[in-house]
Image (cartoon, rainbow, N blue to C red; front, side):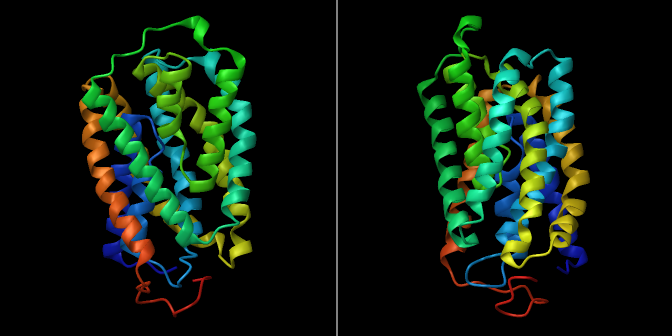
Length: 284
């Protein structure tokens, strides 16, 4: 995969935005990276096979975003390790199963699923804000084994299927099922994703060949996205403890709604091959 200088700068900017938003809102950044890569670099075939490359790269960068964010949240004492110990092993297994499931779909369908997921996430956030839902009251007795395992199972399957970190599901589910305050939900989510995204990324990289794709293409994107995403993750995690989170999440949701609409439109339109790519060559 060839990327010219302008595209390289654009991809790096995507990494910075994804890292900052991910560290701030408690997700790995894929909800920013995947639409951004699709819109900037495009596809080379009708099935949009290159989406699997974008997913593999995004899952690696999720680790780079989560790592500094988790450290910041740990320093701020907002990581609930009692919850993480239950969720983590379940999610490691299910994220690998989710990756296997994603390999059964063509990239175009995965794009449509991702756009629908992003839209649902945004509508949920905006609905909570409009209702002015109160912050959950901490309840140590409200995080039993089965509820926490359910959070890990659902989050892992969806994360592996769509190529996301899973924080967008974990944060609201932690609030709903474990009664965690928002900052604890974000901190715990970031800590879990450091491990689970590593397993998911490894599984996705290992299966790229099944689509006629080369892992080196995903590695190039990781090198372009990774450094700025890492910096953004540190910055976003710092802002989590300084900004009004509900207002910030509304702003992020509005931006992501626009990205979801453009992603869905791109998935439905005819492909516009990258200038350097021969048509109908998924292995570009």
